[in-house]
Image (cartoon, rainbow, N blue to C red; front, side, top):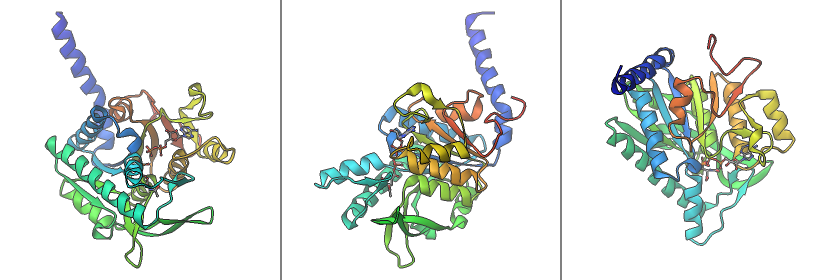
Length: 299
Ligand SMILES: Nc1ncnc2c1ncn2[C@@H]1O[C@H](COP(=O)(O)OP(=O)(O)O)[C@@H](O)[C@H]1O
Ligand SMILES: CC(=O)N[C@@H](CCC(=O)OP(=O)(O)O)C(=O)O
């Protein structure tokens, strides 16, 4: 067989291998939390958007919930303020809230634009639209950190309507409280609340690190399968810091509340989403409820 023919056959084989996964996830909701840390490289950003668009085109129902923490910090710095975080959450005064909402709105529409360019219709909304995310003030260990919201209610109607009309929803983490004040929501919190509310088949957090390390200073301690009780232990013992704290808390929350599969993936790896969904490579960290394996039965 000539070399060209072999290459075509290899490509066909890849598609055939994807078949059981396409069947498994057909019409299923997959929430992709796309973090600001994994948005800094334009080429990678394009690949993430291509992956999500492909998921949509093969019959899944992806929803993107995005962050933009790095970009917000850059703009907060530009207006002469110092970004401040407590336990991975941004201390958000009125001025910071204004900057955050502007930046998140811009990120939102840039993602919409990229999906549209690929020929799929996306609708970008914030948690304010259609009463999507109703919040209460969130405290950090009892401390007031400003306009930081905890999601109390998700209006799933708007999400289902968009999915039914075949739009790809792209959601930014800003919400309203009962008095219609604007709140900044950690994007991991928003993604988890949405995944729970729609009972997503999968929630994937795309970030800028391989996954969860037992010891963040030693990459050989990457954990492939992390059980809820181990995750709690790691947090209690202080192995989890910064932005990984809300992420892991949300992973636990999601897996304990009806989301079937929860993963932390390295958004710096080209096409990490496709690799995770369509192959048995086992990249990143899978958060598991009990003793089950991250690999589907029979694989
Ligand atoms: N034990 C740990 N394992 C992996 N990452 C950790 C750990 N502890 C802290 N981190 C930090 O968490 C960061 C990911 O959180 P964050 O920067 O908020 O990402 P995102 O913007 O994608 O939400 C990593 O870049 C890493 O520096
Ligand atoms: C309250 C809070 O921390 N809000 C986050 C919202 C954006 C976000 O979460 O972005 P990443 O996913 O890129 O970290 C912030 O202001 O940075």
